[in-house]
Amino acid sequence: MAISSNLRSFRYLWASFALRVQIFIDKAVQLAGPLYIILAVTLISCIIYLFFTTILPSIHSLTSLQGISHAIISIWLIFNVFFNYMYCIRTDPGSPSDSIQDLEHNPMSLSDRQGPSGEGVRWCKTCLKVKPPMTHHCHICRRCILKMDHHCPWMHNCIGFFNYRFFFLFLFYLWIGCAYTTYMASIPLRKQEEDDEDVQVLFTFVLAIAVFTVLTGLFSFHVYLVLSAQTTIDFYGHRRRRRQARLEARQRGEKFVPPMHMNAYDMGKLQNLRTLFDHGGSYWWLVMFLPHNRPPKGDGIHFTQRHADDYGRTIQRLPLVLDEDFNTTNKGSKNDTFRHVR
Image 1: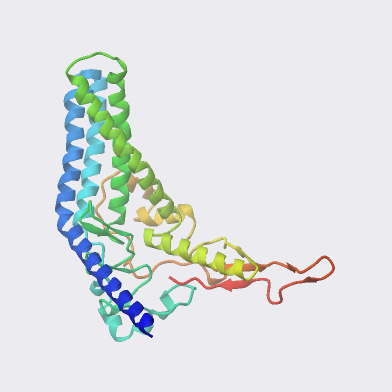
Image 2: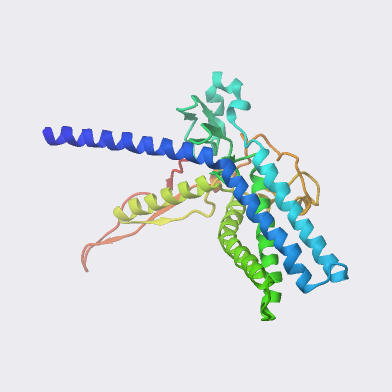
């Protein structure tokens, strides 16, 4: 009994310590948000300054056609980077408390909006409010965020339904800008001429290629998320549940068969991409290349879903061989539905 009591006391103390550490980290991230923004703007501005004062003049004259063309391309990239960055910072990602106060008195009205998984109404025990699909509570912002992807310290903001497009385009243009700067900086470096500008060019090249390398992984991951209609939180949740289902099936001597469609909101790659940029018309893709500050379609609460028959996971049972002369096969249906819970 004494050992059991000591174990419970240790678990309580550890949980209390972990909670205090989490609260400290959350407050630190919140307070450091403006510093992250200043650092990001400083690094980007530093690359821009060195590009126009050192790299571009060493390759082309600024009064030549080539120099003017490169300057126009650079200004276009710079404008889109800062436009999407500032709008991502300033745009509220959305909160259910701002949109569905009337549902607080009738939370069961959301029961048919939780997807074909049938998990019923989701409730935030911190905000004491109904949570729509893909809504999660942010411990840093201290509220629920519609279609929350993650809290980004570089934005000093959560990335959610109303500002995810700005975040995605910021990564897109910054990635292209770093690749462009890396290529342009490599031209004077290949000349192998020693002068005072070599240090500045080399610094710009190293900084641009470092940011480009990091952004390649991050941007590729978000391209995958967009094409598969997932958020970062959904991705890790799906992976964890899939790993658990595979382990449970293996323990029962069964084989886990992944579904054709991993989640109910996956409408196909092109449609998923169009959902992010679509504002009507056949030229929806122009939103990627033209600055656009209109909010996305929808309210962050209702989402188009696949039919229930197209969703789910199946488990195919395998025979258990006891010896060479006697085989026993598991009884039961060959296709058991795996229940997906968000």
